[in-house]
Length: 467
Image 1 (cartoon, rainbow, N blue to C red):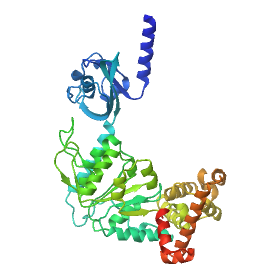
Image 2: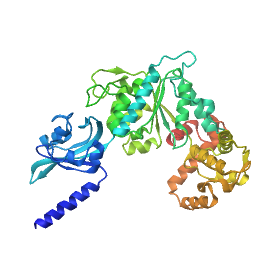
Image 3: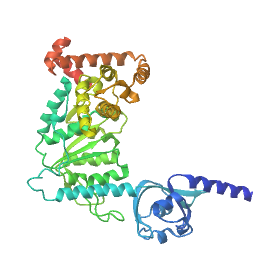
Image 4: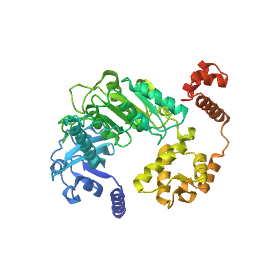
């Protein structure tokens, strides 16, 4: 019986040691009883420096009030996804996000176990970026570099299109640039959302002020709040007064991409800024004001993110004052030759080549292809072909595999599945409306006449089909 228990303990120890996250367990008195190598790596310590020792002796910057492990030992209540910053015994600042659970035997609390994810490096890089942006903002600009703190490089003329719907979108965007109303943009991956947003900023009265873009999916959710709103000194161990993106974008434009990746509790705080123009740094008590033009983007349709509750309804309606939809490349295939030539010229310059055109076979393949990655995928396809091209013409053999006829046939066979009738009718209706708008250069009245429907009906369908 003793051997079986010993074997079971050894197996458990082996399992816990192989888990790729830091695990730290203490008994009810705060003495460490388990500490795996991942936790040791996070903390910059050796196992033997921690095992059998009281938590506060190893991490002197913590206290019974600030330690998540000791707090759970006191309350018996679990703590989920709690950010924690502390210094180890070597004076190194560690940033983690912890889930801490009570250990109970026969309903008796005997200790606590913590699973920690190390965000030290990510946080350091994020804070370094904020510090650099803050320095750029506070630097006194000369007349020559008065607009250098703005990182918006594109103008509306940089957006190349022959498409009537897209040209109408550009006209709408220029009108929106004249105000400070919030804008919500929907566009699939690779359609050029930030290109459009930068163009709006540069066409606005805020063009000499900062432009700051942040992808909400690129920052761990536990750090996003402090990145947006900044931190107040003393709000947690190691915290310093640091401005967030709202302060750094003061007077300019803040662009938040993939907004639906933002945690719902942070969305609630973002809503408050939009409604009142006020916010607080994390851990701060002082109310700060923000004169910032908010532009947000989704890479999924609004109805989907609202249905799946990854975007708050109240935030959606507050941001959706101006709604701009960027059409995917498959809906504007007349732009493909124009964009191909642009990218050929671009990579001729970068690669020192003299490619003049693509073969008719390549043009036909590009026209047939559905471009799930949109303009970004088209650019990468041209760049790849330019690497392989050894003459002045891009040929089929120079294309990446995803552009080859065999791959195209595989994709086509996968798509030759019978659609549900309702979806097929919706797609057909959408295509006819887009064709009518294209032929009338976006004139809704004339398009309605072509389709032989009332103008009000067409306007309703444009909203319903998100056109």
